[in-house]
Image (tube, rainbow, N blue to C red; front, side, top):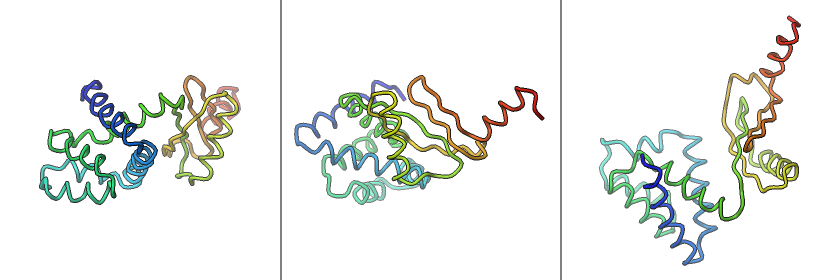
Length: 175
């Protein structure tokens, strides 16, 4: 997928959402869709499947996009133009436009098990204070960590995982 294509489609929706004063609703919906898809990766597979009719895909999109007509139309245009395989990328590009305008930087928190929303919010606030920037963290699962957490924000990495502690012990010669 060409990045510029995603940006153009995302900018079109972004500008419309700002004009219609629904940007916060669309951002919340975008995050909700990404979170649902992270919990159930088959959602984007379903939408991009050649075995599913366009009418079934659009019915699913209608349910997914709730009462947000322009958002629903945007997703339908992406499907109609053969971009269903890249819906996640287009939605993330839309979120990235918002984050850039709001001065929000994105980071990742790696854990063995998914974190609840409250814990992620606490970590976001803590890291935001530490680096004096608004931070939004995405929880990614990494079973290799064994336990603990690893945070990556911009060029900063905070690794408090058991895997890292074991590596440090081995490096120091303790076996």
